[in-house]
Image 1 (cartoon, rainbow, N blue to C red):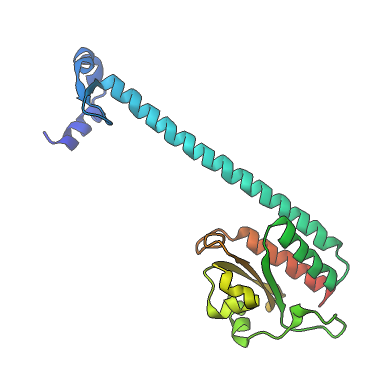
Image 2 (image 1 turned 135 degrees about the horizontal axis):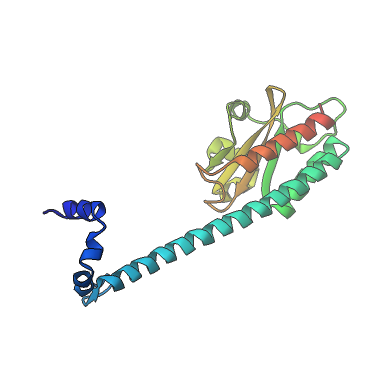
Length: 216
C-alpha cells in the first residue's frame, strides 16, 4: 500500500486505533529534531506543542494589529475633531500639518491645491505644480502607495532624494480633483504597494470636506 492509501484507510476507519491500541503504543517513530526514536504518543504531543506555538504567534500578531488599528483610529478621530473646529482654509491647512507631523510622526508631507480662491491667503499650498502630476492625481481611484518616482517625488523638493516610499491621496470636491496630499517616508516599507489604504482614504475624505467647507 502507498502512503496516501494508508492515510485514507486510517481516516475512514478510526476504530483501528481502538482495536490495535496496544500495538500503536509500541510503535517507535523518528524524532522530528533528532536521530532517536519516540513513541507515537510523544510525537503527537510534540505536534500539539508546535501547533500551540503557531496559534500563539498568530494570536500575538492579531492583538498587535488590533492595537495598531486602535491607535490609528484615535489619531484619525482627533484629526477629524480638529478639522471640524477649523474656521478657515488656512486653519484647516495648519491643523492638518500639525497632526501629520506631531500625531502621525510624518515629517515629510506636502499638500497641493490646483486653484486658489480669490479671497484665499497667498500660501505655498497654492503654488503651481507640474500638469502631469495633476493628471496623475485625477487617475487615482484610491491612494497610491509605493516607491517614489521622478514625477511624484518632485512634490517634496530637496527632501525627495532622501525618501524611499510615499503615499499620494487625491483631494476631490464633488466629482472633480482639486488637489493632492503627498506623504513621504525615509523607510521603504512605511508605504508599500498592496498595503491597506482605508485610513488614507478617510484622510482624503476628511481633508476634502474641510477644504470644501472653508475654501470652495
